[in-house]
Image (cartoon, rainbow, N blue to C red):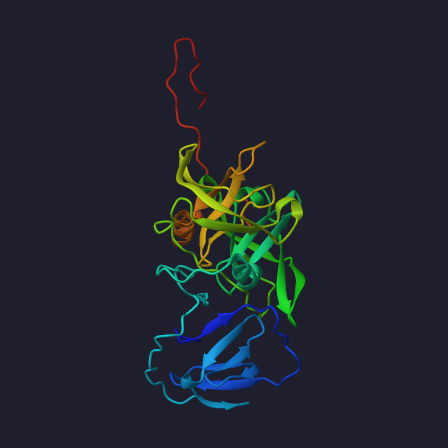
Length: 331
């Protein structure tokens, strides 16, 4: 697993996988990077990992070869000049299931971020409709809206994988509902027919550092038009609707965007798009990412069993006072 080395991730545009053999770079801290060496510069190697391209400083590499063995870990010398682009890592056995980006990172253009994060956004299909979703870790766990899958257990997820520098569409049919919270319109799913494939995931940010007027963008499948990118700003962070607070954004949101991510320019999810005001423009809304974090940390309270349609908590109507002339309740 790569630690926070002086490694810079690049956009895939313009690079070709070619037909080079895989090589391994052994690093000072005991880790190793395996991929295709696209080119060698005086100060770094350009390595194609298949799903992204990275720069590896030569000062961190102690051996290059097809089958390099990494030695005992050493403390790497920090580089003051090479920035680190946050990249999600696998936490399949952790308690949170997601990668949190609590420290503010550098900002990038929407074009750069879409190229790097677009694979993490999926289309969620059910017999009654479709929506969007996004992977929160490489093990196949993803977030969407509750109303996208409400009343359904037959769910499929369509993912665009980057293969040979091209996007290949693949549909996964075995998708299990892990947990769902009707009151905050959130659902946690897992792709179970992915085999050993790892999925591109995105980190969850926070709204505390989000400012009104800050640029954001959404990726989703409005009206079934998959991989649609829309951009706007945060209009307000505390729009109260039906007793809950939402992020309001000018990024266009339409049917099919539901469950998709709202990103800041650091590539972090700051909200889950879930509704808009009908017959209006520039009035879209997203569930704040803190609600997603709380849902994931307390997912056992919202656990769902596909084999038991009566699973979960069902709340009955509260008792009411009898008025004069009302018949007593039946027993």
